[in-house]
Length: 178
Image (cartoon, rainbow, N blue to C red):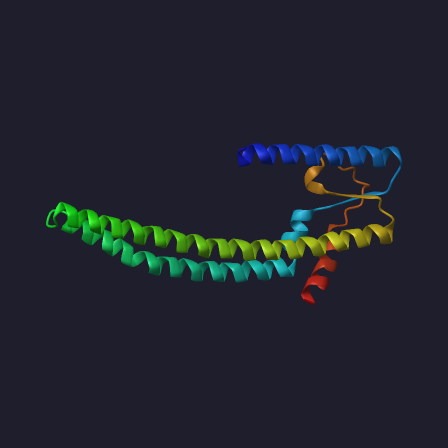
């Protein structure tokens, strides 16, 4: 299944669930609040530090990849220049060696990228979990029965409380301790 189809289906299911919760909560006159999950998660000091850290690591990784790539480019150029001079067998052997070196380079570059992606995911997961706990805490404190992310609502009445700023402040306090 393509990523786009999976995303559309996941979004549709999430929207249906959210609308179902909202309808049920409204019918029961439940206390509802919203928050801007994306703004909160991206706005935390921890996320800003993570972005800065990951950007530095990504730049270092790119420099490492460039350093690994440079000899390959030179080897490829040399191989092109020697094509007319080398025997067919020798040229084929050199092509095979270059193909192996290229495959090794791609594997190393992929490993470097995977490491960066895993670190990014770890940071995101940590921040998201902290935000989830804070949202639950605020819900209990203020008696909210349903708190929805703003991103999945089509409309929110002006009198529905937006707890984004409170969540962000508490998330910064909690995450800055770590």
